[in-house]
Image 1 (cartoon, one colour):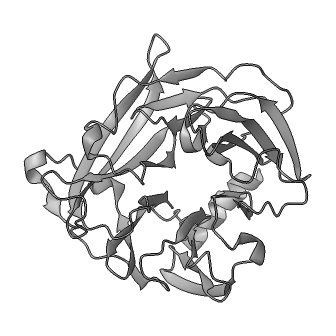
Image 2 (tube, rainbow, N blue to C red):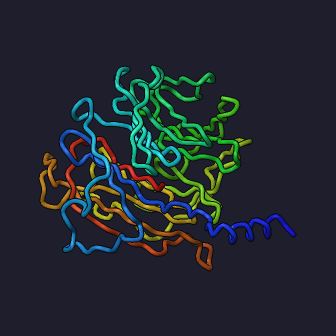
Image 3 (cartoon, rainbow, N blue to C red):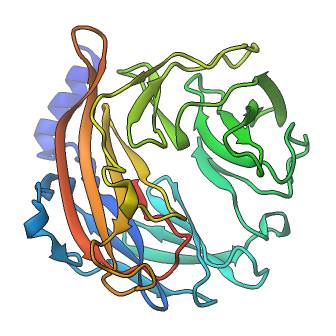
Length: 336
């Protein structure tokens, strides 16, 4: 008799059922009160389409966590790390601690302060395997990166080959429309590699989806794209092939865009995503902070149609009026 059959019979004798994996939720981070941040827990299954006339004020449920900032009007850094949210409470101060919010137990762990190499601000941070990697303008890794300190990292993504290769595209700080090139960092060897004078076609973080076989990311013009995964071992003269969905997901009214923020994408697995975007509320002065913005939160799937074109499916969008107190902070959203 096989081990699987033995295991099945033993389970019947003891009356125990296999433990179900805990249900995942969306965790949304907002700067919606005057002295700090709020984290909201959202059941993706309960999101329903709202019409413009039905937009509500604030979230229907209270936040699961609310905490003040050490320095008023100064932002924080938030990164997903396993089932936890890593919070750099003050990236500019060597005395303030980091926080780790465990979503499974709804508990907070207070950690040490940030390493000195990360003080001054974290440009990008991403979890790879059992480690959290952060890049700053100080370049603390043993191998110096092949771009200038004042260059802007416009996009980044993890390679799906298991070697935790981080691809990044840099733009000149003065001429942001001009790409400096794309590089990768081998986290095992601490080595950089040059890949060409082109940029990844999306902004911010892109996510690899195995069903689509591509990196998925948001474009600056309001559309979502599927980008062919670049080779980690060779240089290329051209940008990887990219498919763009026809449906515009954000920036539908460009005049209401908040200049210092951008839309945020979260990967929910199995070609499903969550998009969060905050825009200026119609008829409200730009200097207003209370109930000044409309938060759009949508979930959707992606697939290729019979012609091989990228298209959205199961699109559900929800909107609510929120306050905003830190102009440079973009809402963060995590699936865990």
